[in-house]
Amino acid sequence: MKTILPYLFFTLSLLFMVGCGAQKKTAQSAHSVEEEKAVPAWHTCLISGAHAVVTTDENKISATVTMQTVRDSMLIISVMPMLGIEMLRLEATPTELVAIDKIHGQYAQTTYAELNRKLTPQLNWDILQQICSAELPTGSEQARLNYSFGDREIQLQLTYPGRKTDVPVRMQKQRLAKYTQIDITKWL
Image 1 (spheres, rainbow, N blue to C red):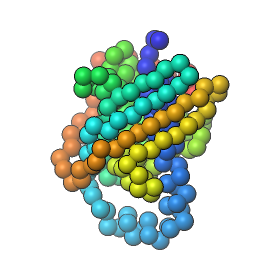
Image 2: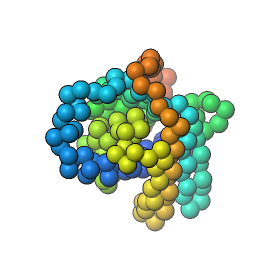
Image 3: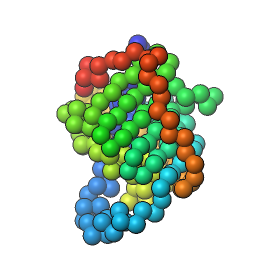
C-alpha cells in the first residue's frame, strides 16, 4: 500500500455518514436548532481516547482517535493506531478539509463541494462538528455503520469514552511545507 490517505478519507467519510441521520432529525425541529445556535452549550470540546474500528473484507484497522473542536471554527481529528503516535490527521474548517499522512509525508486538501461529488450522503460542517463533539441526536456513546463502497463492504464502529467541554484545546494547524501535496481527485 503506497499511502494511507485513501483509507483516511474513506474512514472519515464513514464517520460523516454516521451523522446523516442526525441531519434528518435536526431538520424536523428547526426551531429548537435555531435556539440552540443562539445559545451555544460549549465553546471548545475535547474527546480523548475515542476508539475507531474499520473492518473491510480484507482488513480490520483499530485506532485511538482524539477529536478537538472549536465551535463553528475548526476541528482536528488525530488518528493514533499504535503507541499514541499521531500517524494521520484531519484538519477541518467550515469550508475545507486537509488530511495529512504523517507516515508517508503526504497531504491532500479539498473543499466539501469537491468531496461531495462522489460522497453519498453529502458531508457538511455541521454534521462533522456533531460527530467530533459527540452531539449526535441518537445520544449514543457508540456509533456503528455498515456501508458498501463499490464491491467493498465496510463496517465502522466508533466509541466515545466521554467528552470535556470548555477546556483548552490546541488548535495549531500542521505546517504543510514538509509534506508533499497529492491530488485527492485521484481517489474520488
